[in-house]
Image (cartoon, rainbow over all chains, first blue to last red; front, side, top):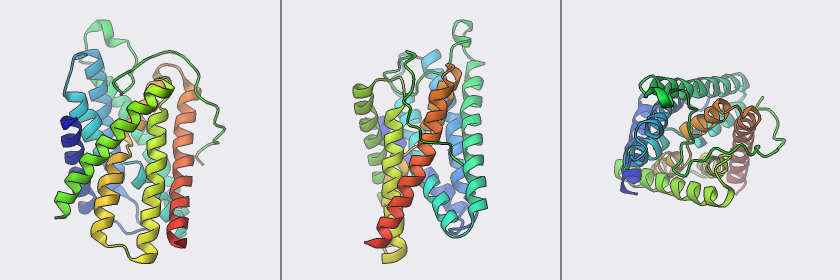
Amino acid sequence: MLAIAVGGALGTLARYGVERAVATDAVGFPWGTLSVNVVGSLVLGIVVTLVVGRWPDDRWLRPLVGVGFCGGFTTFSTFVVEIDQRARHGHAGTALVYLVVSLVAGLAAAFAGSMLARGRLPIDVAGSDLPDPDLLAGDDDRPGPDTSAGTPT
Amino acid sequence: MILLGLVVAGAAGALLRYEVELRVRRRLGPAFPYGTLLINISGSFVLGLLTGLAEHHGVRTAVVTVVGTGLIGAYTTFSTFAVDSVGLLQRGRMRAAAVNVSASVVLGLGAAGLGLVVGHAL
């Protein structure tokens, strides 16, 4: 619990610092949020893969760096509010590009992180898949829900 | 003072996210990241609401920073969403991954938009 709180506080401060350094108005391209989300996804991909593959008994790395820092550093709410704001102010193009680039770069970064970490793993787990990032990970193949939510664009 | 507020709010947001994720996981199982989905949708609504209130009713910047950037920013997470989605893809669960990405984006945007509208109307 303490590790999560410390990591969350540090991640939040780091995000605040980046957003201040790369400040944009309500219609500019949100480089700050894009950067923290891509970097945080890369780091979490590395951490989750390392913890499950190499240090399954880890007591602090995942709570501190994974749940706390990466979770506090990256943000989903700011990401969607920034898209809404740009769309409302007549900058639908910026909103769409920001949405697509964030998704593609964020997922690619998480994948790259898991492959990077896997390169450092022992052979017997090198072929395993990226595990769930949460503590009580399971891997059954129950299909996901059919929310018929539609596609993002 | 802003920095102290951010430290407390960031820690609280991360702990709240952990609690919600654990509870949802206990109830619905680990097969699909329902917890992160719920967290990101609910947080997007609250940040939309706060942004709408700030735009139309002049909420103090310090409050927006501590609650919006600190608490809600740390509560919601992009990295877990990305790692969850890639994990589903790597396990060959294409449909679940597509559902997670599209539901997060569509429902998150909808929740933020609804929050903005409510914030303006209040």
